[in-house]
Amino acid sequence: MMEIEKLLPQRPPFLFVDKIIKAQPNMIIGEKSYNGDNIFYSTIDGKKIIPSTILVESLMQCGGAGVKMLDLVDGNIMAVISIDKVIVKRMVAIPNTVIMQVENLRVHRKMLHQKGHVSLLGEAVLSAEWCCMAGKNNI
Image (tube, rainbow, N blue to C red; front, side):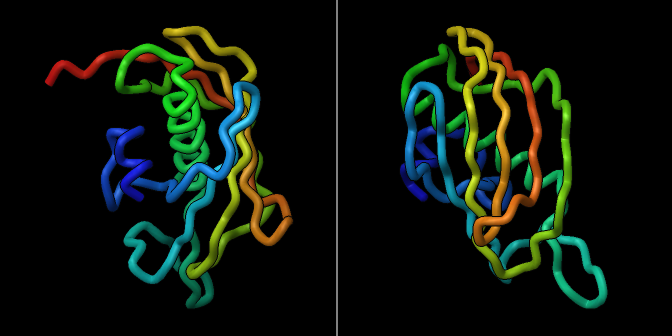
């Protein structure tokens, strides 16, 4: 977790990526374990479910951590400017661990266009595409 906290400004309970498994200029793979401590969930038929918005945020955090790890962008924060093409295929119950795979479609020092998908036990859960701008937090 400490490695991720060096790469992202988010802190628990708003940190939705545990580790970066692989970071290459074109592909980033990360992991997040959702357990009983997670405070962001929906309840369906008595089961705790991770909302799709949290899964999208997990993807974006994974992509942001990966590009920061690779030093592909300037600045210490990423501001989301668009989210597109979100497709939800299934739900993720708590407890579970998801794998996130993010593809860098276009990377500039100040702008980032990525797409990715979340999988659970090898099955597709959610996919999305997004753009971010890099900036500096002077606080």
